[in-house]
Image 1 (cartoon, rainbow, N blue to C red):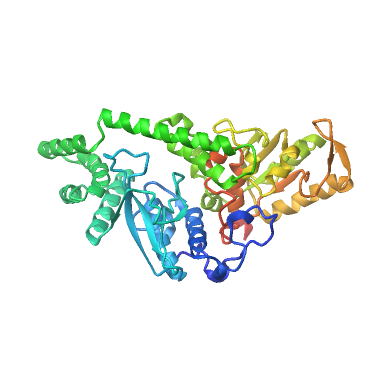
Image 2 (spheres, rainbow, N blue to C red):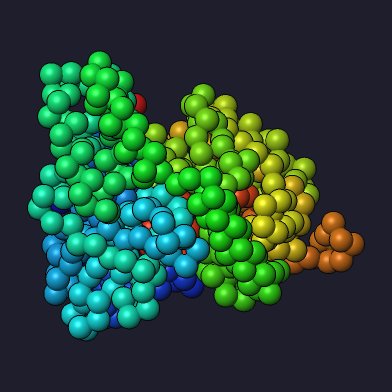
Length: 465
């Protein structure tokens, strides 16, 4: 297994309640956890350690931990067996959620795991955000209507389809294999669960053949498989109805820390599933001159880039030190982006309060963060960041600890080392991924309810050696 995935001895429980990720539920020795929680922790590790890539190289995706839902299922399948956390497991193609139409062929890979407690669990470890991704639930409460086991033939077809899509993307397509590819994709359509994948490959292959008969056949297959206008309209209505149900449920919870994890799930389902019909819900941010979808920014990406975050808090703005703190960091380290946010204000997309989803003390911190805060993404070792952070805290806040100051709202606020501590720096890539999206929790790939990979601290470059 890739050395970025920790072995059992490297899994350290989070025992301090003030730790950002305390509520991931891994607060005792791994062997003492229930089966469902063990699987959940391993799923977290796979999700955050895979480099999200919709079209990976099929020859290297497993070795490099770089890929999509198929990649994640293969990796978790091996990882969970290596960690001796199941009796058996198998990858299946799942289809048909409550808000999918009967005609849907939206099959995607998930893992069925028979735990040592004799309960079979279903889990989708995809590195992308969507309905129930990353959750572990007993199969007795099925998420889907249909589960199709992937046999050896199907596996070979899937690998060939991956090869077609990847080589086309890289402009490395082997035209000599065109007829072989077409035969394989058409044969793969004998499996209902592979029709959509085969169709995607055939749409690529049609570009590389001059055979009119083959072109017409592929066009006819496309017409018969893709949803027609009435089916698309029906699917939109069903999804809109489900989103309305999620919104109603979220409205009953938001504004407090009641069921915070479920609030975050609901808000993410509303936006991430809603993007299927409302593309304007997508959000992007620039990193190294490239616009990246927020939902794609996970710990592995920031680890590979060597980026961490600086969180300049409202208390720094209150004292007038925000620019001094900001400039001291950006003059010392390369930085690639920043934005301002009021963490006490509801988000513009679903109206949840960001601070509730960034720390277990979120509810207690809302008043002290009612005002401007600033998040910076910069290339720096977390040790260096934290050393500089502590210097600012000691110099600026030292004389103020334990004293009361009149806050923005005209009422006294106690200057507290945990609450009004002016600046925070991420300790590792998982926390950086969480905090860089602190203002957009609906798009957080890494949440505070996940277990942070202890091996994704900071990838040193040559200058750091």
